[in-house]
Structure formats: C-alpha cells, structure tokens
Amino acid sequence: MIDLGDLRSRHPELAEALAQALSHHGAIALGRRHAPGVELSISIDGETIREALSWSPTTPEHALMVDARRATEEAAECVALAVVGRFRQWRIVRRLQPGESADWLLVDEAGQRIVLEISGTDSGPFEPRVRQKRGQSALASSRGRPAVSVVRFLEPQAMLEDRIASDVP
Image 1 (cartoon, rainbow, N blue to C red):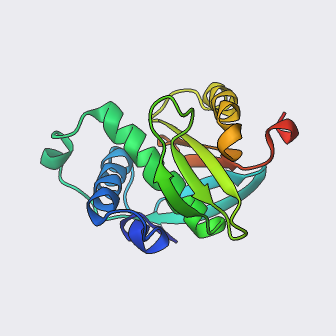
Image 2: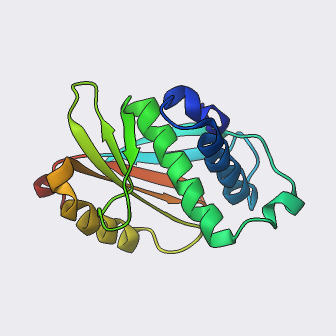
Image 3: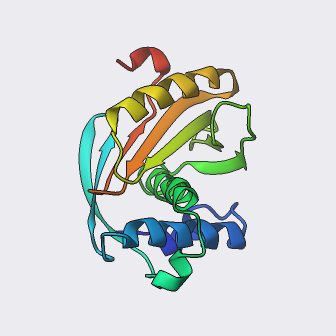
C-alpha cells in the first residue's frame, strides 16, 4: 500500500509543510472520484504493478480552496514521489526551477543523479502527455539521467520510466 500521507518518511528531505501540501492535493485529486484503498495501476519501465493508495480524505469545502489544475499537478507530484520512494528508493536532492526542463533532481542508491519530469491529468489523454514529457526530460539530461512520470486520476494510473533516453521508444 502506498500512503500519500507518509510522503515525508520516504523523502525526509522534504519540508514537512511541503509534504503535507502535496498529500493534501493528492487527497483532493483522488477524492474527486475515489475513496482511500483505490487501486493504482503503475507501469514501471513497461512492467505493470497494482498497489492500493491510502490518504486522509479532505472535505469538499477544503477542496474548494484549491485551484483544480494546481491540485491535479501537485497530486501528480505526490503520487510520483511516493512511487519512486516505494519502488526505486530514490532520494530527493532539490526541486528544479523553471527553465531547468524537469521538476525534481534526485539520486539513486549509487548516487547517480536523476532528473524527474512529472505531469498529471485528471481525465485527459495519457499517451500524448507521456511523449511530451519524454522530450522535455531529455532536455535536462545534462543534469542527470532523465526520468518521466505521468499520473492520471480518472482510473487512477501512473507510469514511471527511468531508462536512458535512447532506450525509450
């Protein structure tokens, strides 16, 4: 089970307030259609894994305080960071800034740098978003190995691809 409220234990480098905000947005995006315990279908480098998601539900009033697009984007970051923490044990180094062509700089267990580009959609098309993000993460490859994660909340589903860019179709 992946507990979105447990994000900081997987990534202690995150400030508590940021981990809580990401988890809150995750609860908003998932709570639009799902209850805790819903199954997330995760494709990691082409292999499909199914894992239950857990989170603390939020109230409809609290959800109204957040822009829906922002909630979706930050919820995607929450899910993606939870997935890389659970299945890859990557460690956050820092948030990348606009213009750096990805969202997060991480390191793997061997200390190799990874630039992770994350995207989320509530119900929009999945594959075109994956292709777009592959290209974007390749631009950041000078900072580390490119990786991509896309999350869609309708089903919910997620993908993580951390192969070398030339290995990706």
